[in-house]
Amino acid sequence: MTRARVGLRTLLGLGQAPPHGPSRSAPGRNVMMRVTLDAQHATPLRQALIRDCGDQPWTIRVAPLHGTGRVQLSLYLPKDAVNAAIQRVAHLAPAAEVGQLLEIPEAPTDAWSDLIHAESPPRADSPGHRIDTAAEGDTVAQLLSPDHVLLGLDVADRETLFTQFGHFFEQHYGLPATSVTTGLAAREALGSTGLGQGVAVPHGQIKTLRRAMAFYVRPAKPIPFDAPDGKPVSDVVVLLVPEWANSTHLRLLANVAQRFCDHQFRELLHGCLDARAVCQLFASYEAADEAERTGR
Image 1 (tube, rainbow, N blue to C red):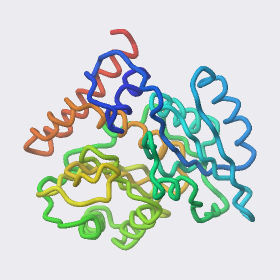
Image 2 (cartoon, rainbow, N blue to C red; image 1 turned 45 degrees about the vertical axis):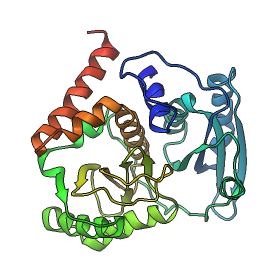
Image 3 (cartoon, rainbow, N blue to C red; image 1 turned 30 degrees about the vertical axis):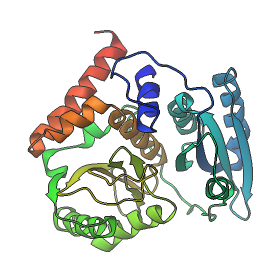
């Protein structure tokens, strides 16, 4: 967990930290995270945050989504508490949806204040969800294979990227291209999935998909993505999950954030010249994480 917290601070612009270095707090710099979940889970989540973040400044705002039985939480957390909060949400409310994840400037402008207080459109869940039985350890490294890596894709912007990726997915996996491009574009309409530092994680829940899938895409040239830091994107991880796989969705997003916050990992990734090398790099970092967790 320490590595994840250090990495998230790097990804969100606090500064580069060594992959296995110690965690350092950044007083006064917070992140806003929006979470939509069933109303019954709001109080348990708040109580969990009190336990986990009791010694740190944080606030929570609750807005009911009328007619849906759900609420939208706006969480204002220290950067080094974000990954723990995402894991807590995934554990307490598997059907939750994590929306915007944005760093709050020390002196927010009027535009930032408007964004912080803006309301996202309500979204009602469809009935009859299947149970998400994916393994707790699902990671991008486990889902990635050489045929899921697209290097040097000739695209000029994210719309073209989604279109070409949709055609690729239809040709290789049989699902209509429109179902993929529409799913990715719908999530993008809620706010850019650009994370900063040249990284974007477009993702969507696809109704007819049976299992989670992850893809790494490297455009031939960095493309604009409306990222929070304004930088064009050169590393794209596309996550597609079944409509019912909310827990898997959250875990994979947290995994991508942890991995790509590591400056050394990004540099090594840019040096990978073929799909197999990309997969081997993801796998080697995953093995190092596992060794650290188990003490081997």
